[in-house]
Length: 103
Image (cartoon, rainbow, N blue to C red; front, top):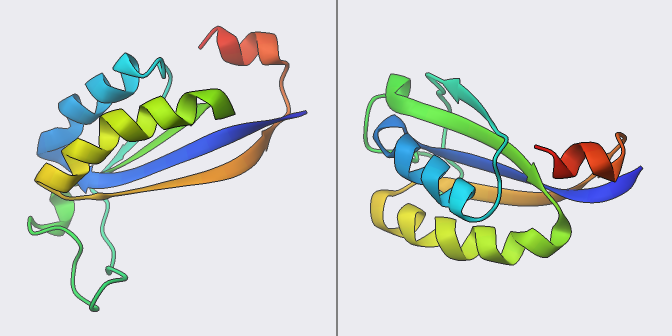
């Protein structure tokens, strides 16, 4: 087992291509996308995103700890411009490092 970073992004589906491009540019080539995400925002009790609930996507990706700075530098400007949110947390990967590097 070893430590990796989990990246969770909730954003408008119209920005999905730009967000995935920014992850790819950061060296993160594997991800999962869940479409039609709905929920209630943490800020003021209102929806986080202005579009309808069915226009949101949830993006899940993992990276090595040394890659996270580049990911944040590439994703933050998109989220600041178009809206959305990103969470980064520490998790344990149980496969070998060799498998993660091949993603």
